Amino acid sequence: MVETEIGNVEAGPSPVFFERPASLAADPLGRVYVADAQAARIRVFGNDGSLLRSIGQLGGGPGEFQTWLAGIVWQEPNRLWVADASRFMAFDSLGVFVNGSLRRRGGSTISSSWSGWVDTTGFLYSRESELGIGVGSGDPRRSERLTRFRVSGGDTLVAADTFPLAATQPAHRIADRGGGILELVDLPMAARTVWAVSPAGTVWLAHTSTYRLDELTFAGDTLHTIELRRSPEPLVGAERDSVADGSSVFSASDLPATKPVMSALYVARDGWIWVRVRPAPTSEWDIFDDCGRFLGPAVSMVPLSAVTFPGRGMVIGVTTDELDVPRIVRLKLQTGQGEAVTAKGCGT
Image (cartoon, rainbow, N blue to C red; front, side, top):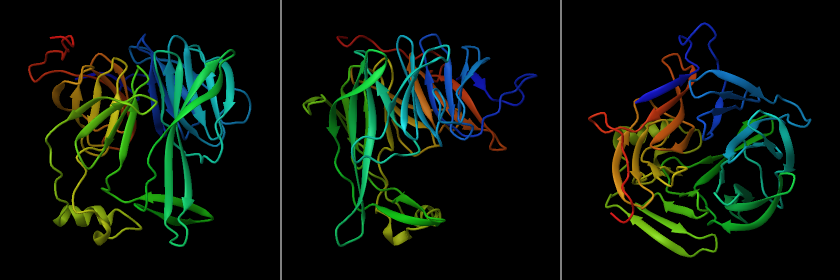
């Protein structure tokens, strides 16, 4: 059920327009933070969808965003963490700039999008990647890791440790877009590793070729495993041709024989696990409670791209109308009878 809409041109005398909303966050008071990558600013909305304030602008000064606005994440009790092309920045709930730290570390490369998480103990987590060319073959090779940052005095980030993720190759190709711009293009429908950090600071990992979710400590010890019996569907016929037609560097013969059984993994603030079954903007989900019990599938009323999960069965995401104008919606999980979906205690 749609509870709130933001950015609908018919929603009042002073409509809000978004250019490219790329990342979302929400705080416990219900305020929604929207990072508009193209506009290089963050807008803050109240629980009722009213615009409260804007944060930042394009520039290189304190509280300004360089080149692009990559992502945001909320950390209780009073911090909004923002990543741009080269820095992490902290703002309070009123939009006041607090401090900044360099984002580029070691040999890491910087993406135009950023995945960040926080846990209940005060750590900030950041996905970082390294890109190289395979020796002799020329195949691109990308390795990724999670870096856990301790927030020290003055809101300075100090790297505490890292969680390495397997290098992936060669399901990527480099496309020359002209003007000296090179783009790393993923093989459509290729199986890959997806992950998310839980509020407890554990890491949920899955490989999209099989329906198995593993919860690991940051030291790599397995705590829990969730499995569903679900076989990959074949990628054939018109669907296979359509996927190939949408790629500029891969042909139908390059595509895998089967489709992934999942496409993305999220952990809500209350520990519920949301598994996106199909790639965005299709919004089919499998939902597990914080005990790992399968609550069932869910389908949103509108297609969603960027999403955040504040808990209590809510999802906030970016959708578009029939004119491809983006807007933000807040959805509430309900049963087919219109009742709220709740979880029982783990001992029941």
